[in-house]
Amino acid sequence: MSAYQEASSPHTMNTYGRLPIALSHGQGCRVWDVNGKSYLDGLGGIAVNTLGHNHPKLVPALQDQIGKIIHSCNYYHIPHQEALAAKLVELSGLTNVFFCSTGLEANEAALKLARKFGHDKGIERPEIVVYEKAFHGRSIATLSATGNTKIQKGFGPMVEGFIRVPLNDIEALKAATANNPNVTAVFFETIQGEGGVNPMRIEYLQQVRKLCDERDWLLMIDEVQCGMGRTGKWFAHQWAGIKPDVMPLAKGLGSGVPVGAVVAGPKAAHIFQPGNHGTTFGGNPLAMRAGVETIRIMEEDGLLENAAKVGAHLQAGLRNALEGVAGFKEVRGQGLMIGVELTRPCGVLAQRAVEAGLLISVTADSVIRLVPPLILTTAEADELVAILCPLIKQFLAEPV
Image (cartoon, rainbow, N blue to C red):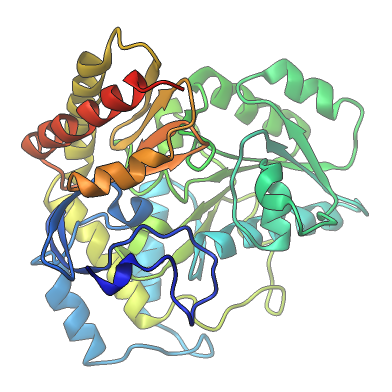
């Protein structure tokens, strides 16, 4: 029996409901625990390990960078920061980038931009539209923007200045903001991650873009989990042919090295001036090299096309295997961001999947979330279906 079968470590804060394994190394879409058992990685570190594990092009680049310089503060120019910013501007069609270290920090910066945008227009108490089931982070401000009372509990009072609306309902958005001169921005995930893999519809995205233009609001799209090629386009909102004014990124941008970014268009790019915002670790040379190399490898290896193709194959495989099974609701998502919703809470499946050699997560109580590395092959997708679907069927056959 492994030491990791203990319920929790005696020395780390008890903040995670951990599964009783500890991973030691990985290769491609597989990882091994300290006891030598292998697992197919259907979780990718929660949409972080874009290139899988021990990628033959990424590892030498990071080793090279570590041998040169890991950290430099933002008192000085950082060449790889300029290079990564230029690439993100090219891929997004936006104009300027601020770098930080996490998705939470990127979202926090977006909220500050929206407030400063309002103050600069003479609005004393700016308000931001956010969504039911949203997840933007666990700082006090991003927690307030998040639409989950369960994780907000115990941390009140929440920050004021948020108006919450349902997904994909333009009339509800108009009604919630009618005759309110304090609204400065609309903020959402193109596909909600923690909220249960809930996509915004293309026509809704286009309607919100139009409304923001008409009312001089910032359109702020959180692409932390659904961005960086995960859906088959660089950013999930690009399926709707729109551009946001503010776009937070993180997770897959550094393939495991912590990196976050806020990409802004002309309307928001110059709101922050020196002294308005900053970070110690953001934009450091190692993180920037990881971002530059991640994008280079994604382009060289055609990983957007792979995410679209293998994701469609995986979704079809899941639907075929689960169609007609009592208790199975639907498969949804895009590319390699997939949710399998059941009609009842299924958190136990994360542990059962581990026992069967597969890493997954369960979010929003009843949604199995699959966000594997973007290098996943069709053969590995078939293997994932072959492991997961019998577990789901067995679970659903059990008495409630």
